[in-house]
Image (cartoon, rainbow, N blue to C red):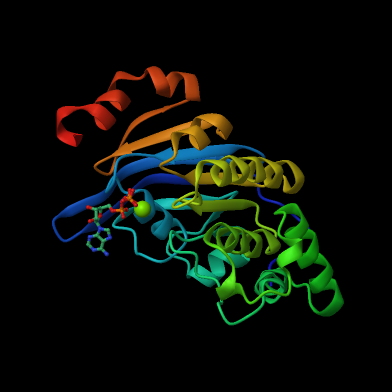
Length: 247
Ligand SMILES: Nc1ncnc2c1ncn2[C@@H]1O[C@H](COP(=O)(O)OP(=O)(O)OP(=O)(O)O)[C@@H](O)[C@H]1O
Ligand SMILES: [Mg+2]
C-alpha cells in the first residue's frame, strides 16, 4: 500500500531511451509532468508515446536514462511498485475486468490506495460520480458501451489516488460529443484530485483544449515542447504531421 500522507509533485524522464532491435522507439527524451497540470504527449503513429508510457510504468526496460518521481529514482521499478507509489496509467486497450461490476472494478482501484470495505466502496462511488458513471455502478463492466468502459478504466486509475495519472489515448474510438465530454472530465479529475496528468491523445481538440504544456515526439525524439499556441505554430511539428514523410 502506498503512503498517501505525502504527495509527490513531479515525474520526470531524464534522457530516456528504449531501443528495440533496430528501432530507437524512444531516443533521449526528457520531460517533466507536474502535479496539478495537464501535459500532452503527441506525435505521429509509431513516434514512441506508448513505449515511453511503458518504460515509465515499468512494463519495458529502459536502454538508457532515468525516471524520477519527486526525489526518488524509480527507473526499472516493477509496474506494481510504480503504481503503488502514485504513478498510475491507463492503457490504449481499456483493460477493465469485464466480468466484474463497474463498481467492483473501481473498488479494486480504491483497494490499491488502502481503502477497503465500506470506505473503499464510498471512495469508489465518489470517483464514479466524478466520472459521471455512478448510474452504471451495478452493470457488468463487459456490458457497458465503449465510452463508458473507457470511463471505468479511468475511474479505477483515479480511485488509486494517483499523484500522476498517465492516460494513453482515452478518446480513441469515441464520437465527437463523447470526446468533448471526456476532455471535460479529465479537467475535472485534475481540478478535484490535484493530480498531474500526462495525456497521449490523437484528437487535437482534446490536446489543444485542455493541455497546459505539450511535448511532441517524432521517431522517438523530442521535436518540440511548448504551450498549445507555440506547438500549433511550430514548423517542426507541422512538418512531422503534414510533411512528405508522414503523408
Ligand atoms: N515490443 C516491441 N518490439 C519491437 N518494436 C516495438 C515494440 N513496441 C513498439 N515498437 C516499435 O517502437 C516504435 C514506437 O511505437 P509506440 O507504440 O511507442 O508508438 P506510439 O507513438 O504509441 O504510436 P501510436 O500513436 O500508433 O499508438 C514503433 O516503431 C514500434 O513499431
Ligand atoms: Mg501508442
